[in-house]
Image (cartoon, rainbow, N blue to C red):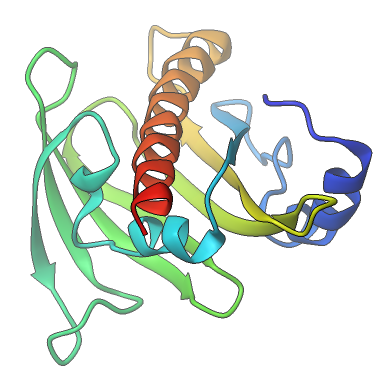
Length: 186
């Protein structure tokens, strides 16, 4: 997990307590974790990628395509379902996912895996995009992504956490890269 400064931790404490309660698993067959990414771009740019539930491939490395199964009045809203196709080479082919929460005011999104051909059963994540300010007043962003997932039969909690953390970290690094490029271009 990326280290937060004391000031960042203080600013994020309320968000962490509301959305990212890791370790509060009710079952020994579940694994939870939190991943933090600092991004040198304003939060509105970062949020534009995160909130695009219908276009996860914009920053998620291992997604080849996304097809929306349900929308509400033609827009993506809580309850919308997507089917993503995963790139070859991973122990997965497809994932069916439902949007659980979309809070534009607080810049928080949650989705849950409903099914598909993969090993991350009952995966549920919450991502929050949080504005910070440097001493000079320039805005930057800290993204916090937490998740819980069932530990697959034949795997340990450590193996499951290592795999899921790696995927989340790579996705957040790509999110940082495209957000920072977009920020310098505007």
